[in-house]
Image 1 (spheres, rainbow, N blue to C red):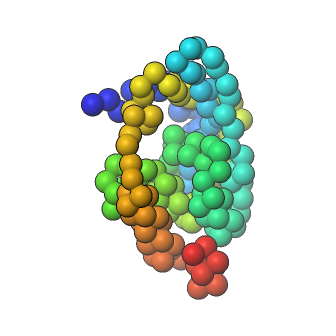
Image 2 (image 1 turned 180 degrees about the horizontal axis):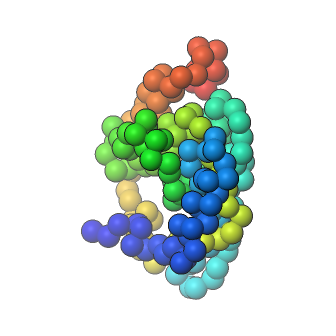
Length: 167
């Protein structure tokens, strides 16, 4: 079994760029870059997710992640502050590995700001049988992931009004 990260490559400047971004953004818990997506045919396209970058509101960050629009998962490929990892813990999802990034990135979004480095320093292989494209899932796995997200909202530090709005 392959890991989807084995299909991906980081550029030599990846870590330095993200460390610099975290250093210059003390409220950020995570820094991430744009991604170059490479298809099985070798076509390249730059993917950007800027909807959440620099957003000071935990509610707005969480709402953006819950919408799962487009490239919402790009921050998952980022660099985290150790203090954020200690507070968030490691990813856990009631559906095991299936879509484990969604509840975990939701949890992180409610802990602090994300900073985007507008430079494609991560290359994602897409197509040709990569792990993320070979997963098979069903209705109940999706419901289980959604329940994991609801659990993250409940355990967050958001007020009851924001929690209710996110539900």
